Length: 150
Image (cartoon, rainbow, N blue to C red; front, side):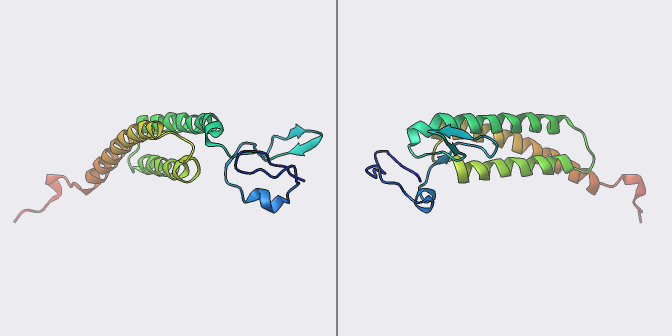
């Protein structure tokens, strides 16, 4: 059903079972909606095993998600709320993006790109933490006129 030809997985033209192919690590290219036609067969999942070939594909995916995250964070930074819910939401989105990049894309993205994204996200994260800290401190302060003096 499947045939693999690469430097690491030479199978001499033998067909493999689906379970053998799923065990191979690599970057999954296709989406759920898109179906590729290869030699008259419908293919939904294409896995790129070579890191050099996968890098441009992964870079495009990560940068698209990164730009979406930055635009959402910019909107949340501008928003003014009294309870700090937008700050918590922004911090959660930053952490979710970092975990996703760490688990899925770290092997395929260059270290310099990861560091550059991390620096910008850490700056935004510090701003959000300071904003959240200021909001929390404003709730803890009581006006001097409401206190009883003895």
